[in-house]
View (cartoon, helix red, strand yellow):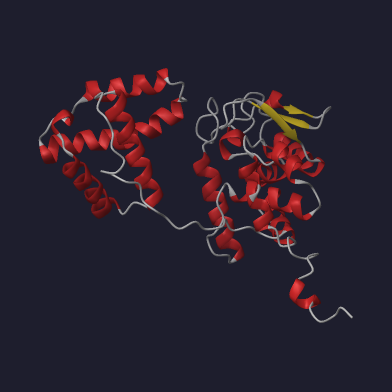
Length: 287
């Protein structure tokens, strides 16, 4: 395989300041693409034309059954590879991105959220999902929490280098803190990673375990598998809006960089139209 090109691509991403996780993600389909060129086309990337690039996307469609979003991610990787490694111009008209349907995330009601969390039998996952919901944590932020990130005095959780590349803090709920106390004393009082890996305490737990716990509990409660790790972050944003919090406050609570990311909670809220007087209902009422 063209390992030297893959290494150069990864070095470029590192120079651009991408995180290790992002570099790994961006390298996934470039590695597959280079392997495809070597084993299927038997060509060097410099000798590949647009028809063959389009054939590669069709090949992924046929063999991988990728979603339109993932196909767009692959095209973005290829664009980066061609511009920064091969130093070639990229024509977006030759390999356009896919259009895709946009679906609203599934949100539990406030009552159903409490029922879901309060009935989780495993205390570790009950604690993790309680924190993820009540503090609006992303799954990566939750898994990488350390003991010293919890401030009982300030009732805050300190977050190290989050998704938007900045550190921050968020609210610590009293009810979540109570569950955290129970967990901490029951799981050997961890003082480095707050949620150490079940098989290797020297590293943090991975999202896989939380995802699996959510799916198992959905099955336990007889629910469809609609929830994801991010569902609870969406839920707290929606419930804050339903409880009267303004959009700017929710933006700061969830540490969104753009207000556009926060506006979805107006759409997801079950109370958005409750106080709205529809003009049609008022027609004919005026004397």
